[in-house]
Image 1: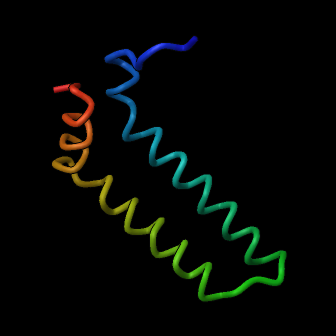
Image 2: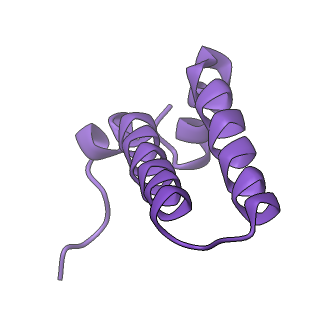
Length: 72
């Protein structure tokens, strides 16, 4: 089993969340461009991804996230 996250992994968690957010954003954009979709549904996804990026850029939010995991 992989076990719990190490301190180094926890420290990199904000970057991993940002990378995952960009992956999902890329998937949503490609879906929007190549499929018949509901634009309103994809607008919600886009807005969520942008709010996540902005939220993660704030150092206080990153610290709060890490403190939830006991990193600080």
